[in-house]
Each structure stands twice: as structure tokens, then as C-alpha cells.
Amino acid sequence: MAGPRRGRRDKGDAKGARILLVEARFYDDIADALLAGAMTALEQAHADVERISVPGSLEIPAAIAIALDAAQRRRRPYEGVVALGCVIRGDTIHFDIVAHQSARGLMDLAVARRLPIGNGIITAENEAQAFARARLEEQDKGGDAARAALALVALKRRLEGK
View 1 (cartoon, one colour):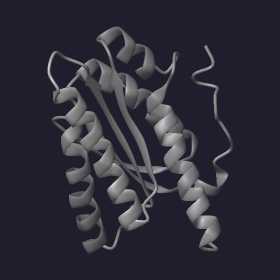
View 2: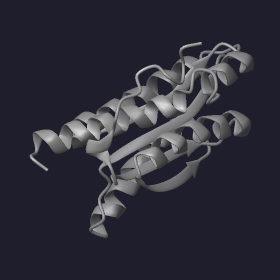
View 3: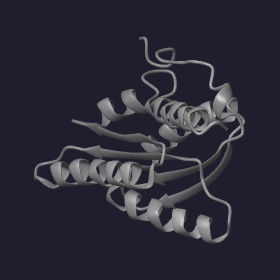
């Protein structure tokens, strides 16, 4: 599989970035797999990571907003965010609500606050598919989300002349 090697580039421009990682723990084993990939990518970039956990993916955007405001008040703002979670389809429309609204919340934050966010909230039909998407040695969606956030941090630094 092309998963972990796909899209990797040197993230030197984001070296040392202060990153907020927010993880939903609804599916603990899948969350651990996503976290392993994200932390590997963030450690490679020598990022300064602050990690917080929330119950589920729907809580991620609110937690990010709360953490951003608190960091700003402490004069220690984050340069980027990595959001990790998993939504598995069930028998009701709850899957659609959580998948769409968590993604919408992240996009709203990213645009309104000009904030680099890597969206690692995976959606899957079943647990086996979720694990395949989450595992570092398979599709590594946690690592992909971290690399996306770092790429946007690097872009923002470059465009702002930092």
C-alpha cells in the first residue's frame, strides 16, 4: 500500500511549530492508532505538541475553539491544529450528522481564524476499514492529518515572511 509514504515532504519550514492535537477517544484502539501516526509526523518536525482528549468527534471543534482562546490569553498561541477522531457508520443517520458537522466545524474554524488544521477525523463503514485507515503501517490518516497541518503552518510562515 502507498499509505504512509504518500505525500511525505520535508516540513523544515514548520520545524518547532506549536501544535494543538485534539483527539476523540470514542474508539480507543482506533484513536491510539491515529495518535501514533500523528505523533510520529509531529516528532519528525520537532513540533511542540499539546494534546487534549474529548469524548467524540462532534466535540472536537468546540474543544479547539476553547483551547485557542485559552492559549491566546496565556500569550502562547498555537500555530496549527491536528484533529483526530473516528466515525463509523451505524444503522441511523447519526453517522451523517457527526461526520458532516465535525468537518464543517473544523472548516469554519480554519477559515474564520486563518488556522492551519489537519483533519484526521476518519469516516468508515466498519471497524476493519477504520483500523486500515488509522494504522501507521497502512493508510496512516493520523500522520496525513499532522503532515497537512504542518504543510499549512509552513505555508503561513512563508506567506507572512516568518
